[in-house]
Image 1: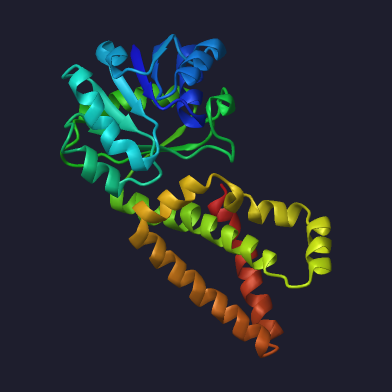
Image 2: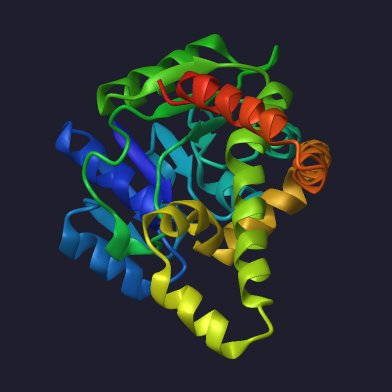
Length: 279
């Protein structure tokens, strides 16, 4: 199958590596000619270009651009696509994407592979990035079922765990377990940096170990991605932030009141329920 990938960063590049390894022909499009050259050198693509005309023979095209340029990207692609081409995306927000892209291209399947790290760019692309990771598809009543099946058959061999849900349910769910943690982690960093005593701040940096590394990791990632999570999933994220603030206030109250048994009870409940999120 001829597979197009627009945006050759971590996700797009990793898709290219794995799909080529499975025998597909991969056509890559990037804004930068240097990225195209490097993608060919690394074996991410069979062919690459800065022009979307390369995708005229593509059966399926993965849109792997940032959310902020996705609509413009699709509009630029449309004149160069076959009427039967399936478009799908990898964006971390689905409500806005589906509402925006579906009217432009009826043969569109919303998608979100929930894999990645703090690295970005073509050099970050790696084999087997998606092994064991959830891959969410968000078809609507207007989505052709045959197109959904084609996308499933492409991503299942990547050893992903495929889930179907509505775009709205996806956005509410990822607000809790992906977008909220980014904002919490970023706030943790800012709180630590607000320490007024330079000596104490220097000591804190020297003593920071695995606990701080784990809780600050997602807040120290690509700032553009964090900003777009908030911009394009604003309603669901604000809802989860308000709930988090309420629970944080409750913990503050327990500590102010020397209510150690109440605090221990909350921490014990967290200990019991955390594995349910990490199966």
